[in-house]
Image (cartoon, rainbow, N blue to C red; front, side, top):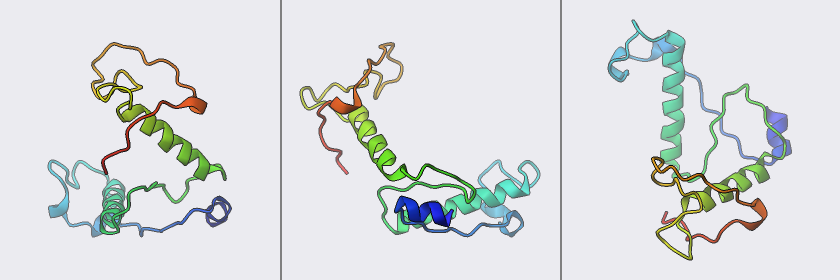
Length: 131
C-alpha cells in the first residue's frame, strides 16, 4: 500500500486496529453484545469509530477510509475529483432554478422520474454547497 500511496500522491494516515476482546461490553450499541456479534466485528467496528473520531477532531472535509488490504488505481486522485464534481452536479440546486436538481430524484427518491444522462464534459451549473 505504501508504494501505491506514493505513486498516487495521497496523504495516508494509519489508524490502529482494535482487538474485539479489548472493547468493553458497555460501549457496544444496543442490542449488540458479545453474544450476538463476532469478536472480530466488534474490533473492526471500534477501529472504524476511532477513524471517524480522528476525522472530526481534525475537522477534515474530505476523507476516504479504506481497509489496509485495499488496492486502487494510481489515478485515484483525479478520479476522486471527478467523482466529487459529479456528486456536486447531482446534489446541488441548479443555478437556473434553485428549486430543481440535475437528478430529478434528489432529494426525494420517491419520485418516479428517471434521471437523464449528463455529459461529464458539460456538467450543469449549480450553486456552491453551504459548508
